[in-house]
Length: 99
Image (cartoon, rainbow, N blue to C red):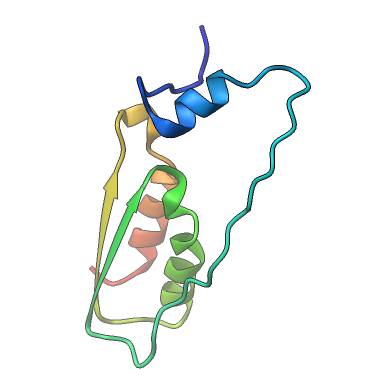
């Protein structure tokens, strides 16, 4: 069994499954800059899916470290419960912040 997630007719899945050993590819890594704009709003909403939550984690830690007293909502979509990243870290972080 494989941990590889293939989407039938998906652009990425089709491209990757058609690669042969030794094929050379060119790709571009992450580009961009994600940050929270200040002054901070009283209500912050974050939307992420899968590993797309990773850039938000440092923001959440900074909000906790600076004692942010607003409301934070995280909308985190995944296909399967097994794809839920950072669950324990988010629970622990939430417990350190105001409810």
